[in-house]
Each structure stands twice: as C-alpha cells, then as structure tokens.
Length: 624
Figure 1 (tube, helix red, strand yellow):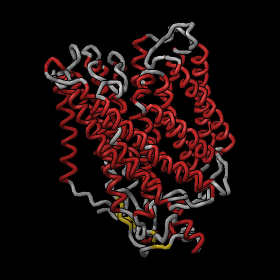
Figure 2 (tube, rainbow, N blue to C red):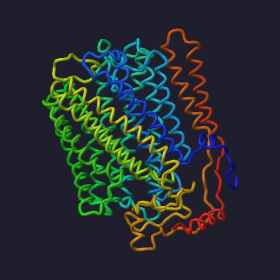
Figure 3 (cartoon, rainbow, N blue to C red):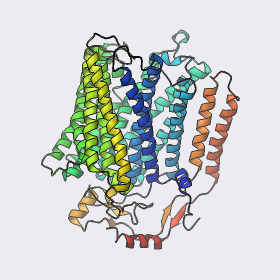
Figure 4 (cartoon, helix red, strand yellow):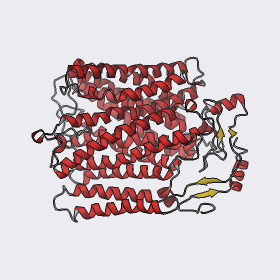
C-alpha cells in the first residue's frame, strides 16, 4: 500500500478518478453537452413549425430530431445533470468522505457516457432513430432504420450505468452517514435522491427487459411483438410506461430536493413541515408506479382500468400539493433574498403547479381522448420537465456553484438570464396549450395555413429564440465568472446556509472532512451556528485518512460495452468492413477481462498521513 498518492497528469487524473466530486463535475459537463445538442434540435424543429408548409426540415429529419430530442433530454441530459449534483453533494451532506463504492461510481459514469456516444453515432450511419422517444412497436420494428438499433443498444448500455449508480447512492445513504445523522435528519435533497435511486432500481429493470426484447426482435427475428406469431404490440407500451412514468419522478424528485434546499437557505427559515415532505416524497414514489396506464387511455384497455388509473393519477396531486404549500409556508414571513437561485426556485413553484393542473386534466380519461395527440400534451410535459426540472437545475447551479468551483456566478447576468429564459419558456409552451385545444396534432412536421394556427406557432418559435439567448448568456456568465467572478476560496459558507456541505473548506479537499462531524440536529450547520461556535464538532480524533486509488478500468469496461453494442448493431448493416462477431468479441474481452483483472488485483488504496491532515486544519484555522 502506498503511503501517499502519486502525482498524475491532469488528463490521466480525470480519466482515472474515482473522486465523487470530480465525477459530479464530469456528469454536469456531459449532461450540459447533451442538453445543448438536444436544445439545438428543438430550435430547428420550432423553426420548421414557424410558418405553415415550411420546408426548413424534411419530414424524415424532423422525425429523427423529435425522437433524439426527447431521448437525449430525458436519458442523457436531465438525468446526468441531476446525477452531477447527487454525486457531488450527497457525501458532503451526510458527512461522508466518499460514496460507498468509488470504483462503481466511476464505472457508472463511463458506462452512461459510452451509451450516450453509441446512441449519437447513429447520425453517421444513415440517420438517427425516427420512431419517437417512446419507440412504439410496430413502428420501431422498421428494418430499414438502422438508427433504431443504435437507440436500443445505446439506451441499454447507458441504462446499466444509471442503474449501478443508483445502487451506489442507496448503499451510500444507508451506510455512510456521519454519527448522529439519522434518516429523519437527512437534508431533503438526500431524501429525494434516496427515493429516486429506489425508483431507478425498480423502473430501469423493466426498461432493460423491454429493450432486450426489442433488440432480440430487431436483430435476431424474435416475435415478441408480432401479433401474427402470437406476439402483442400493446405489451411494449405497458413495459415502456412501467418505466416511463416513474422516470418522470426520477427526474422531478431530485428537483424537489434542490428546491427544498434553496428556498430555506434564502428565506432564512427552516423548511416548513420537514416530516410531511419526507412522507410526501415516499407517497409520490409509490403512486408513481400505480399510474403508468394513464399514458394508454386511448389504447382501449377498458373503462374499469381507465377509471382505476385516472383515480390514482388524480391522487398523486395530494402529496405534491403538500410540497407546494410547505414551500410557500417556508417563504411566508421569511427574510427572502431574491438572488438568481431564489428567483428560479420561487418561480418553479407556480410553474410546476400549472404543469400539475394540466396533468390532472389529462388524468380524466374522456378528456384525454380529446387532448392526447395534440400540442396540449406537449405543453403539459414541458411545464413539468422544463418548468420543473430545468428551473430547479438552474436554481441548484447558482446555489452550489461557489462550493464546486470556488467562485460565484455573476448575479447581474444571472438575473438577465432568468428573465430571458422565463419569458422564453412561457412564450414557447404556454401558447401550445391553445394550439392543442385548437386541434393541432403533435409529432407533425408541417401544417396547412388558414387554420388559425399560424400566429401561435410563430409566437412559440420566438420563445425558443429567447431561451436560446438565455442559454448563451449563461455560457458567457460561466466564462466571465471563471476570470472575474467573486472568489470564495477560504469562505466555506458564502450564503449563510444550513446544511453540512457548507461546513467543508472551499475548495473542498479530496477527503471532504478532516474529521467526521458529529450531527446534533436537522440542518446541522445552522444548529451549530445557533447553539455552538459555528463549526461542526468532530466525532473522531485527527488521524490517517484512507482514500481509494484511481483506476482506468471503468473507462476500459465502458469501451468494451461500446464495442459490444456496436458489434450487435453491425449485424444489421449491409456489408460491414469486418465481421460483427469480431467486434462483439473485442468488446467482451475488454469488458470481462477488465472485470477479471479488477477481481484478482488487490488494491487497498492509500492513506493521507495524519501530519498532512493536521497541516490542512491549521491552514483552514481549524475548519472555520
């Protein structure tokens, strides 16, 4: 065992890192790149719909864009952006030095990344998938569309990474909490991340099974969905939505957690109704698995099934309403600071309520028959996904940015960003409710003029330009702040916040806490400010700190899975350059060879000496 870690080059350090903080930043960067890619597709689609009978995009390209936009936004943008915050802050908020399985944490990131790249590779092999992000059969069984094979294998690989990351979070939160950090003292962000990880465990497994069936049918001519051979096309919808509706809460619950951190911090108040918020989160997660067939009201599953799922869908509004009122009561009477983070958090509340109200409307099966294939549904789920999740991500970004990058983002540019993005969002999607009520079908690449749809479509497209300008301003803000932003090095708690991550030094050392903190209350840092000297009391003496070694094996395993998936896709290609089975074999050797190497190699990590920890404590003034 090495006495202390060896110096590595910057690139090698990031490629081999198992540090949850660096992996969190890598998730954020990867998610941002996919977010921009999917956002550009959305802009192009809105330009196509800006005028009737427009020819900016062909129908085939539009179908590919609409499929990839939805798939990337949900699987490769929103999920990793939330995972970025979860990776970085869950260990800090529970007083841990790392996640339970650092190697698996790195493996989860690289497998997610390889799956995303595999999906994106479809553009170079005849175009992206074109069957919609839900990939309904029999449309997704089109033998002439190679992009659908990239869809199936790309999501299958990426889903493995998401699944093992969720298991890691579950074990971390259960087993790695600091002394005194009981489950009912966990910050709401940790609670929502815990419940989300449970949802992933039970929702991504049916998705993996469904994608496996679709792969077997597309590549190996199985007949699971072929009615003439005894298959059933509707079974795919059940499999997909048993995953697909919990997926909404997989994204929304961590967003709720972020809002539950930001609002108390900038209201200068404890979160109202903490216990109710925890149980509301659990109830939402449970009911999330009870409502999947409300996506299938128009399929013909019968009035009894429709009624049961309609009632369950309306019921889920109750625990959500508890959260809404608790956020409002937290702000009520508080000394609110309306910085950019709080602006996004407070505007999240009415925006999400509007999305929820239209969701209750769609929960009524007879009404859903009218709305289902119209732009009303597009408006509804964008109010949930963008008005909910993306607003929360921006609130979390401005809130946690100083702890992650040692400087604040520029507030003046941040507020202009908020104004531009909020105006653009409502211009784009609020107007789409009316387009839907007027009968404009979704998933169409053009429409005839003279139907009263022209002006509303023009307004909706102009809104996307506002949002695009806002995102550009955010990029400018990030670059500007990197050079000119207010530095917070040595300032552990720039917001006068309440939770444990703000008790760590800035920048956060690789071991997070020189001494594991003793937790004495909910909002432990705020408790110590009121009842102590403002610093966390240690639960252990200063000593050597054990840390895990970095490893290149997660990257190699992910490359192996990439080759394995690509080799299976090559089975559907005409005249591949090399035998597909050779590529599959290379992938298997890389993947299973690396796993075997990992299992037989003893890697006990390294220790940071007590003297180094003492020197760090002295430099930080005892952690103050």
